[in-house]
Image (cartoon, rainbow, N blue to C red; front, side, top):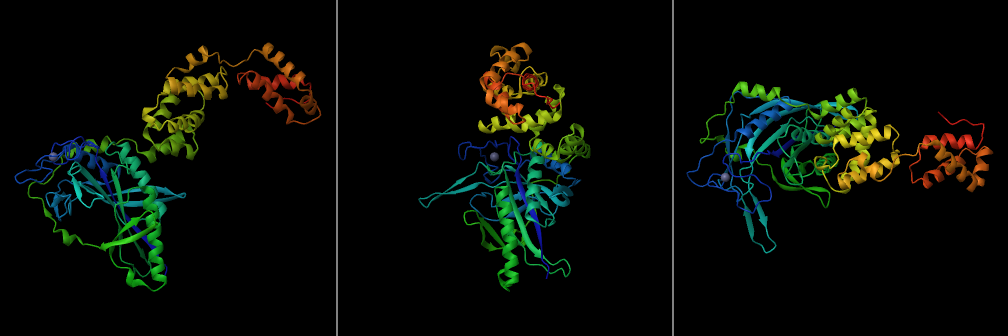
Length: 484
Ligand SMILES: [Zn+2]
C-alpha cells in the first residue's frame, strides 16, 4: 500500500508577560530558585487564581495572526495528574473550549504552497521543573510553575519533515513579530511535540499515532520526524506491525533515534472538568476587535512586500525578514539612502551581519544605526571612498560608534580622484613593471589587473578604481578601450 506521512504539531510557547498566569509573581528567567513563588502558584489550600489579562490578550493576538476565531465565551479546565513539579496536583488548562480555534497558516516549502490548518491556540500554565542530581537526590524548582503557556495545535496536515521545519521557523517569527513570546527554544520558551503516523489515502488505513515529546530545537523536530516516518515505514514493510501501537516516544539526540517512553495515555486519564475556581472567560468583543485590527504586518507578508516594493530577490527578502529588527533596519536605511535597495541589502546581509555574528550580538544591539549606514553607503555612492575602504570604515564604526564621515575625514580615507596625482602614480607603476606592461600591449588583457593592483596597493586602496582603469589603458597606449 502507498503510505503517506500524516504529521500534526503541538507547540508550547511561554508568553512573555511580566507576571504569572494566575498570580502576580514575576516570570523572570534565571532568578534564584524558588524565589518567584506565592501561595497561589504553590497550590496552597485556600489560595485562588486570578487570570492575567495580558496573557489572554497575547493568545487572542496569536489567534488573529493565525487566522483563528476567538471564542465569545470559553472556560478553563482542570487537567488532573500527580507529579512533583505540579504542586496543586492539577494544571489549569483549556480542554473542549479553547480561547481561539480554527485558523490556518500558509507555508512555502520547496516552491510549493502548503496550507496547514490550526486547530486551536489555548491558554494554560506551565509546570515547575525537577532537577535530578548525580548524588541520587532530586530538587524541585517552582519559579516556572504558573508561567503563562500557550498551546498551538495544528491539524495533522503536514506530509513531510521539511514542512514541519518551515512551520516552526514561521511560527517563531510570528510570535516574535507580534511580541507575545521570545520563542527561544534553547531557553525552553518554545517546545514542540509532533504526532506522526502513516496513512493510505485510498483505503484510509493508518498506523497508530506516535507522539514525540519535548523537542527543544527545530533541528530536533526535523530529525525526529524523519526518523519516525522511516521507522514506521520499515516496520510495515517488514511485517512487524505489532511494534506500531499508540505510544509516546522521546528523541535520543546522541543516537539519532526515537525510543519508547510509554503507551499513550488518553484524555480520560486526566479526568478533565471545568475549573471551579474561575468564572467562564467572556472577552469583550470590542476589545477582541481592536486586537485583531492592530495585528502588525506578519513576516511572510513583509517578505512579499519587500520583494515587490524594493525589487529585491526572494532570497534577500527572506533573509531580511528572518528578524523584525533586521527588516526594520533595512527599511529605515533605504529611506535615508538614495542608491539601490539591493546595495543596502548586500551590506546588511554581508558585512553588518558578519560583524554582529563575530561579536555575538543581536541586531537590536547593533551599534550601527540606519543613519550612519545610509551615510556610509552614500559616501561610496558619491565616490568619496571606495567600497574596499568602506568595509574598514564600517568596522571602525562598529568598534568606536563614531560616524562614517568623521572617520573618513580624521583618517584621510577619501578616494584619490585627482587625475594628475593618479597619472604620475600610474606612469611610475608602468615604469617599474615593464614586463606586465609589455604583455598587455601584446594583447594579454589579464596583465592590466596586476598593474591596477599595484596602483591600489600604493594608495592603500584609496585610488578611484574606475579612473585608474581608464588612465592606465590610455597610458599603455593600447588601441583597446576601457569597457564602459
Ligand atoms: Zn505566585
